Each structure stands twice: as structure tokens, then as C-alpha cells.
Image (tube, rainbow, N blue to C red; front, side, top):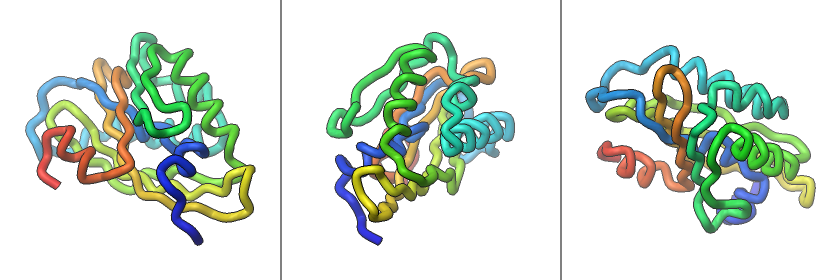
Length: 164
């Protein structure tokens, strides 16, 4: 198994929800995980993994902002459910097979940091690539209103306001 550069990995764009960040009201650092938010995110990752893009964005707000690092292919900021769905479909289209599995959910203030293990074989390669990433999500009224992806988990925690 090889470890691709961030650009190679992003081409397979497991940055699915590795990029959601948002605002679901003030929540103290290290407070209990909101099980509703965790369930929404588990369903979204599962839908993305089976290439069900409509299912992956069902809980994304119509005015959501989704940010992928500029150095990732397709990186940038997307607005609204339709743009997010288009981006995810384009990203998922590069996979021959694989998954983007949430490993841990960490509530920080009004955000949910998700540690993700992305394991993918791209169509352009016969090799498997594995990367550990983080997505930061913000919720409002049970819907994802913001997502920001990070290639570095510690950077995601710092951005969300936690100490790695």
C-alpha cells in the first residue's frame, strides 16, 4: 500500500465530508457527542461510499458552504446543496473502489470534527491509497450548514478551537 500525495488523494476526493464545517449553537469543548449529528454524518458517509450522492447531501442545507483545500484537485468553495452534490459526484467518479470511513466524532464548540480513514483505488491506478483526514462540520437546526476539509487532523482540531 502506498501513501499518495495530498493532490493524488484529493483526485479521488475522499474529501467528501472531509470538508463540512458549520454552526450548531454554542457547545462547550469536550461536551458529549450529539447523537443526531453523528447519525446524520454516518448516513452521509455511507451514502457517499455507495455512490449515492443524493443520499449524501440530503441533510446539507440549501445555503450550505463546503470548502476543500485549494491544493486539492477540484479544491475550492461550493455553495448550496446542488454545488456540493456536483462536486461530490465529480470526486467520487475518480474511484474504481474504496471508502471514506468516519473513525471518530469530536464535538468542539459548535462544530463536529470527524476523523476519517479514506482508502481508495483510483481508476487511473491499480494501487490502493490510504489517508487519514479530518472534516469539520457545522449544523443548524439538524442540517449541515458548513463543512471544511483538512488533510491534517491536528490542523482541523486547532481550526475548530481544540488543542490537538
